[in-house]
Image (tube, rainbow, N blue to C red; front, top):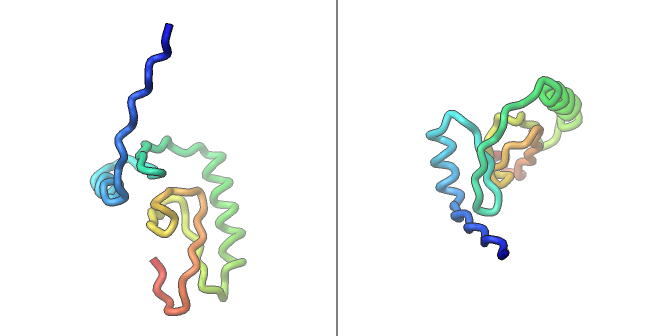
Length: 96
């Protein structure tokens, strides 16, 4: 018996992903042209994220870098939601 071929998933552009995120109540991740709906967060994950962020902020003080929470959607990291994000701004001070 032959194994059935998997259907290829449609490739989505970053612009398509961003349009979906702006219009959706749910959050999604984007990686290599695929959009996946994200699951909710457990209390333990929330505690870990908060503790990591609390430790990262003082480390970045006086630098061009900023810490961001998991709720910040950014194109700086290929539009991925991560638990903690670090963004370093160029010398001109413009940080997206």
